[in-house]
Amino acid sequence: MRPAPVVDTPIRLSETPGAIRSRAPTLGEHAAEILGEIGYSVEEIAHLRDARIV
Image 1 (tube, one colour):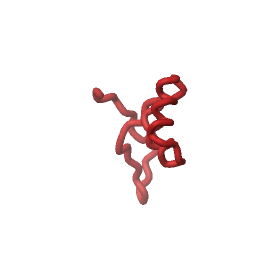
Image 2 (image 1 turned 90 degrees about the vertical axis):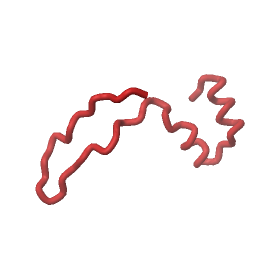
Image 3 (image 1 turned 180 degrees about the vertical axis):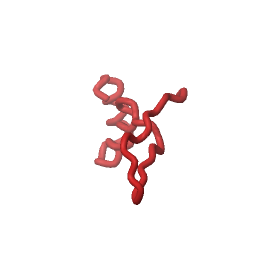
Image 4 (image 1 turned 180 degrees about the horizontal axis):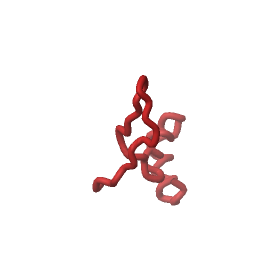
């Protein structure tokens, strides 16, 4: 994956400064991990990907 520009935080706070640590995830980037955490098996996730559901 190639680097993408990231907008800095629009507000500056002296006591609790904000920071951008990473880019936002792309659509569906963490779908398999999330589905696995809520109980879907590897086979079920593969079926959902094959069916273009996720």
